Length: 126
Image 1 (cartoon, rainbow, N blue to C red):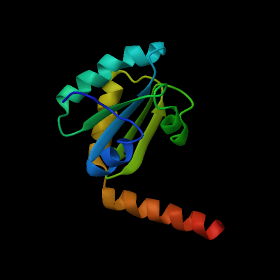
Image 2: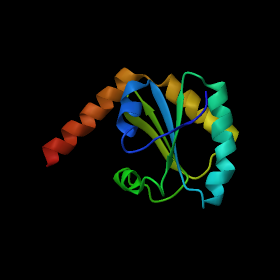
Image 3: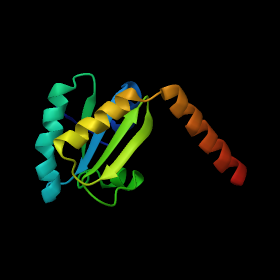
Image 4: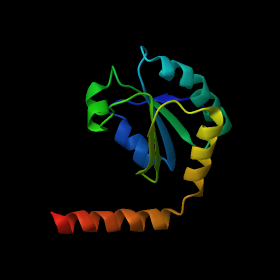
């Protein structure tokens, strides 16, 4: 599966309408972003059940700001609409494969419990 380009208009629906979404935040002037692009594209071909999406931080500055992107490339992984992984810096192919395997192996019931617990704690402190 090829990568898809995300915009502010398509970001949320892509995240919530798919089981697993990997997002590569990048810019054309970024050398490490250009070096990582073939690795990301190759992984998209070997994992057809995962959505591989890219956000051009220059074209989507408001979206990048909302996502608090301060360094690129930044990789985010969402599972069932929940952010489960975030890391800045280009990943080598083996590390990207580890991230994908880790996201696929997550116990989402446990993740949801952790999110609910964290939200309850932050609400109690507010």
